[in-house]
Image 1: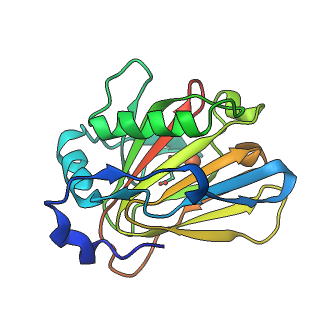
Image 2: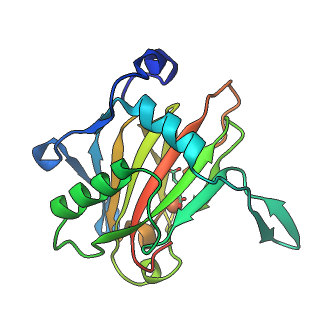
Length: 209
Ligand SMILES: O=C(O)CCC(=O)C(=O)O
Ligand SMILES: [Fe+2]
C-alpha cells in the first residue's frame, strides 16, 4: 500500500494529520455478509505518532494459557477501555472521525483502543476472530490504523477456503465489518526476513475484544 517505514524515517518533523474518509474509503465485500473497507495513507506524518506511542504507551508482555501450558503472547500490548484516556490526542481524533463516518452502522460507535507493538517479524497474531463479547453473535466493526513496518494481514473464511492478503502500511486504515468477526478469521503471520517494528491501533465498540 504505502512506502516502507524505513524510507519515511526522515519525516519525524512532520506533524501527523488524518485525511478525510468519505469517498476515499474503498469497500470490498467478502462472503457471508463480511466486508472490508480500506483507506490507504489515512494518516500522514505517521512517524511522529509512531515515535510518541512507542515511548508513551505502557507496553507490557502477556502470557496466556494454551493447551496445557503458559506461553508468551508474541507482541507487546496495551488495551484502553472506554473510560481510560487515550495516550495521544490523535487517537481521540481518529475515533471521532471514524464514528462520524460510520454513524448508524451496526457495531458502532467505536469506544476502545487496543494497541499492539510487533517488535520484529517474530511477533505475530495467530488465526482468530474478535469474538470475545458481542462479536461472537452480532455484526460488529473493528477499525485498524497501522503504523511502522508494513505487515500482511491475512483473512480466511471460517468455513474453509483460500485466504486473502492485505499489506498494511504506515498510516493505512482497514475496517472489518458486517459478519467479518464471526464468519472470517484474521492473522498477522510471522516473517522470517528482517522486519522492523509495527504498531497496530484497533478501535472497537464497547464489549468487543
Ligand atoms: O495487528 C493487527 O492489526 C491485528 C491485531 C488483531 O487482530 C487483534 O488484536 O485482535
Ligand atoms: Fe483481531
